[in-house]
Length: 312
Image 1: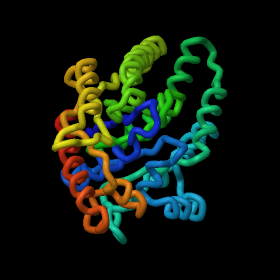
Image 2: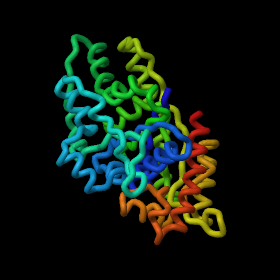
Image 3: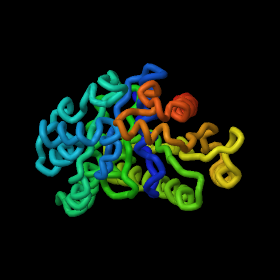
Image 4: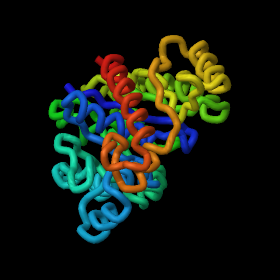
């Protein structure tokens, strides 16, 4: 059965979308896995990275293909959605003129920012408090219900979460087997890690309590903490520079065994690839940034290998 993983950090700019794309593409390209990516952030960064801004506009606004917003709209309208219209195959760019097979995607939509407000206001009245609780679980289960019937079709399903704990993000947590926290080795992007872990423990306890109280037949499966991946690490002499190393060591002491041994360096390879709507793995198509793209590709392959080992 496929593993569902939320990629989350409440601090923006730590590389959540970049890491989601490259973990997914790396699992597909280097380990032959079948992967599904889901973009939950109304900023649509993962969608833009995967298909390009112009490609996104063409697909979503010109061709009117379905996005994650349509999944939530079906909940509001009490209609049945067609999962084949929401999950798109052969959409994610691999190299110029080529897309990945066996790397599927659910695109985000800018109007998802309004969906959280609608979910907060939407209250289906039950005949008693137990039924009210069942209705609240139904609101949290929208993504779970999409995934539960297709998990066997994928090895991994990665969810790129927005930097908040609103109801759309809670949907991702509710559906996930694991969560991973990307971070930059600096004060601002690491101070919230313990808070995220604490919140996840509270969500697990709350969701399980709601299940037990409402007597839901399907058991609630707790979302496990799978680790912290450091991104944009500056190196000196083949290892992290001292200030970054000090932060990594501190976080390791705070979360023993949870920091990935492999990290992703800073550099222009990924940014150069993103500017032409490609993953950094398309090294041969990035001549001006080839040395750094090659280095970042090597580091990412190590992260992908560690990721699959940790979640085995």
